[in-house]
Length: 490
Image (cartoon, rainbow, N blue to C red; front, side):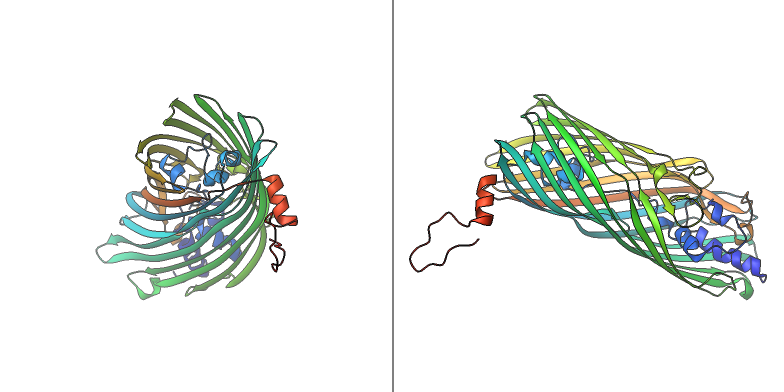
């Protein structure tokens, strides 16, 4: 591994090894790529994780099938029209936790030896959603306003992997890699909803997307000879800013609810600061900063809620995401797909059609209201994995429990999802320039994710009409001032 080309290939291999999408066209060239391109390859964990997570433990317990129900403070993240169903001011908090495990089993290698299996796991937790909702009465109909903050996309990820290949009794190669990623994308949203008719509610929301996440990857390649040993460290800080809008409609009947929500696409300012440290000689600049544009695609959801009993709901959601429109502008002469970095007209990225199913049964125990929930979700990923031509899909059940008493409501939920995909786990550095990846290790990656949600809602005992609110804001309290008291200016 003494030639410049080979050492550069090792540097690129350290990045491509991280990828499930190791077949990217940028990994097929032998000329040095820009550092920001290498960074997008190395930090590919953020691409499989680029899924929005809905708010609320109640919805989570129902598999996320909440578009046609949406009658609590978390409605804004599913269907903003549902906020018009709230009749009292509400404040809500939602916490979530994640535990993820990956197991890779090699079953095919075109090289003389096969790399061993590997596994990794990590956990994270934090605040998922916080909101305050204030309903009013306008023309004898409900009008609600909500301000909320939501961790829409969670990029937390950790991995510690060791892979070993034994070529012969006297020769072996070991790859040790640690990956640490923290951060996510938060949305600050202002939502309003109005009960247009006794059956129909409408809602709109404006959201500010604010993303910050950092990535640190360290790889050490150890061969049988000292000359075959080297290290690569890559760090990247990412920032993404933008605005989008959403709208929803909710129709409610005796035995059926129908909900529709749409979310606009938008162009967000996407910037990266990258640095590379390696023991290999290469022609890549060690520092790089890029100002790019990342387009977030539009999406829509149709939901149906069946009500065979007043205390029983059965819900179904169908969502469509235009992931083939998620592109980066600024890396070259034309936009490239965010998922495989190929020109948009050549990308294998596919739109995603997601299905979610849920049920909720409510019963009473004295002054306590209890709810049992269950659900299932089938969430195909947008990207084609490596050169396998296969598409990964995350599927799994969920369960939840709710308790209400007086002004308080508490909910907990557990979701478990699994996915298995044919992947390229490691590509030999000597094969990076090959279109066929003749020297590769192919296997199956099994991923298990467990999510825990806990939420608390408090409903305030009073509400005001719009007239009362304007009187309070611009006139003051209606209580007469007593002698010696100063006027009340609110």
